[in-house]
Image 1: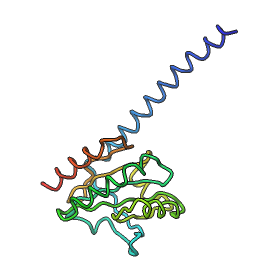
Image 2: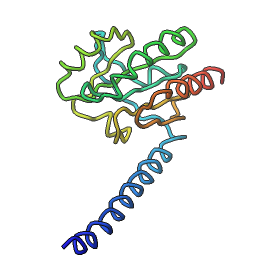
Image 3: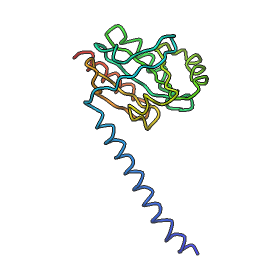
Image 4: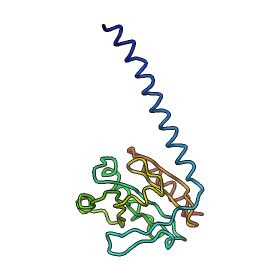
Length: 174
């Protein structure tokens, strides 16, 4: 019996790993396709009371961080993003957290609990998420002063904030 199970399970593991790697290649290739293209214009409601239109931010370096309250890596990076926002805001950098949940109640509570000060935009119908091909939480898109997507970062690992800082500094200097 164990030989029969092993004969079935081992190839199944190989196929699973292969599909996982293929998926990662697809998503990486998809992200690479967006880099160098004009950032889709979006208008979303802000937690600061007004609507924000991305096209009106031209001339600034813009970071869009797509997140959800249920995403542990999102919660971990929020304070780090807030520090980045505070450090470079006066140099022409703007950071928007884009909450992707249909009900923003949990997201609003998280932002309050963490003391995050950068503006939060609401994407309850996933319109912006679809335009930016968000397929991982968090997804961080960095847009240059001309409105061109320069970096797409999927997921978050400790230390990624250094990568974000380098990307922002590079675009501010241009």
